[in-house]
Image (cartoon, rainbow, N blue to C red; front, side, top):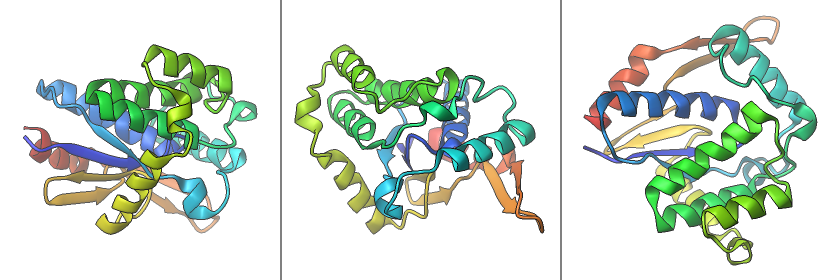
Length: 203
């Protein structure tokens, strides 16, 4: 069994859909290996935070076309201005315990996309840090995020999410994303592609 690694940002809705699918596939196989979700900090890569308007538009397309059961509680007015603190917290927890790292990675996404909570809020981060036994001050320089970003660049990460398993890798394997002539997103699920990729990795 190979280790599945995913480079992704917390506020990327496409990554959330991909991770939900990957975890479901992993659990269906009975594989117990945690999925390692590494940082891909889009605000540093793009030189600016992700737009709440853009995220809302992508989420609307995802809900309409492929994921009607996800993003039920998303609130664009609470969209975070940064994910660096959350990504740093996740990286620190992964260093201690991979299972807890995966749990926190998904909890932050569920807080944002299903409960409409600002995951950059200091009180939210402090509560999570206490529960996962991590000192927020110790991760404030974002070293874990920068290390993941540097490693991802060397590995040729194309964007969020990019999946790696053994010698194989695939950008956003669960979704086929295009724009039509009007510039609107057209999204199709690619179950066969993601199932084949994950089967080879997890079985």
